Length: 164
Image 1 (tube, rainbow, N blue to C red):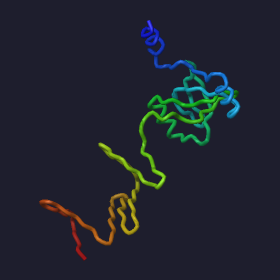
Image 2: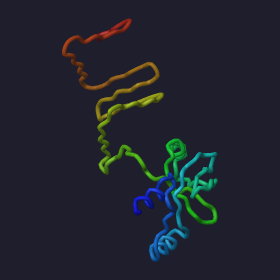
Image 3: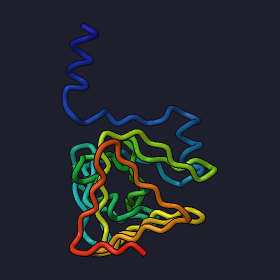
Image 4: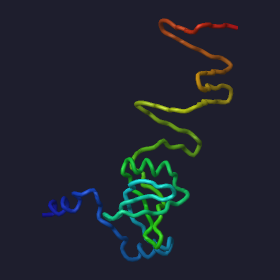
């Protein structure tokens, strides 16, 4: 019986609307002035956003701190947004549903990836005394010492190769 109730309750993609109990709800209302809803992002239209709240479609404003591109990605993936439930509903942020690259407090990024793809008009990898710059159809590699190693054959191809 419990399993059947559980399946019936959670068989759709909509989650039941949950409200904080008693003092927790009053505390949330006191600190923000209004309770919140979870909503599925449907799409963005300029400065506003279409969301689905408890089966109803709302057009809401978007807080300026929310990145518009993030809203577009949320609409494509069906991500959840946090929306105020007051007089003028507003998207305050999005719930993270997948991993992202994190920057440590010391400024380090560590990642193990299967594939890494970046598209840019210009790219620069730079350390204290060396850099790799990619610009249009040109690659510049600079450093005190540049080492290229090959176990078998090292090929340099070009119409002209100038050494010093």
